[in-house]
Structure formats: C-alpha cells, structure tokens
Image (tube, rainbow, N blue to C red; front, side, top):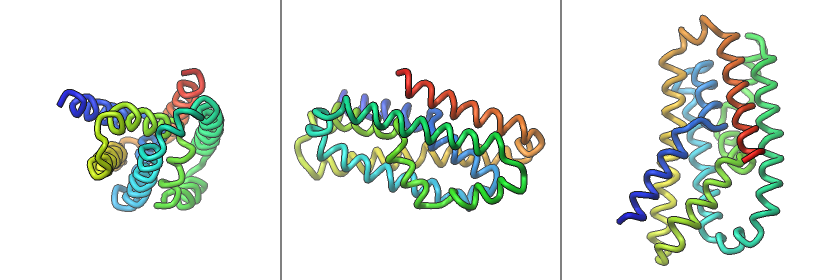
Length: 195
C-alpha cells in the first residue's frame, strides 16, 4: 500500500509541475483555445503511454545502458527546448499562427515524449522504482502504466485549461507572456542539463 501511495504522489508531482509538455500545452491553449489544444495533449498522453510501456518492459536493459542514454537524451532534449524557446520569443503575431499550426497536433505531442528528458527520466525512474520491482504480474504492470499515462495527460491538460481560461489576460501582455514561456523552457533545459 505504501508503494502505491508513493507511486501516486510521484506521478502527480511529476505530471503537474512545469516541463516541456505543460509549458507547450499552456502556450497552445492560449493561442488556439482548449478544444484545439486537446489533440496535442492527447498526443502527449499517447506518447507518454508508449514511453512508459517501453520503460516498464525493458527497465533492466535500460538501467544497464542508462548512463549513456541519459547524456544523449539530455543533450537532444535541451537542444529541442532551446529551439522551442527561440521560436516562442522571436515569434510575432502572424508567425505565431504558423508556428502553432505546425506543432499543435497529436503527432508532435507524441513525438515530444521521446526527446523530452523529463518524461524519459521519469518513465524509467517510476517504472524501475515503483512498478517492476513491486508488481511482477504483467497485467498489473500494464494497468499501472495506463494509470501513469492518464495522470500525465491530466497534468498537461490542466495547463491547457489554465492557458484557455486566462486567454484575454495573456493576450494583453503577449510579449511578457512569450518571454516568460521562453524563460521557463530555458530554465527547464538548464535543470535537465545540470541535474
């Protein structure tokens, strides 16, 4: 029972705190609204589910190779976050529409998970700490992976809800909002790289 409580606390903290998924979903919802950002959030949930399955069923092999994989994931993830921050901070109103149309979709949300160091490290950590060593039944592991993916989706979707609810306030301070979003992505990149 204690392991399940620890698993849930870890899942909620990891899913609802700032990270690439949440920051991008807030940004997209602010630009397009909650309804049109749902597909990005769904992609995040789907990609995270696939990542969790991979991490769960191959945790022993990943733990052996983890030092090399971690460095590569950190570097790729940080480069991607720097690119997103650059695109947000340099975007103008006309360009923002094009930027959002290009990446606000199911495929981008799903693919982000495989270069998102926070998601990758979390998936490996949560499955190798709370799932595979505690539950050896594959059906139970699969149900827990589904639960973790749903919690991840809810975390991302809650940030979208925030972006949609405060759309007018954010529009009034668009430049400040873009700078803050870009700085959050830079902060996320720095914490991932130097952690």
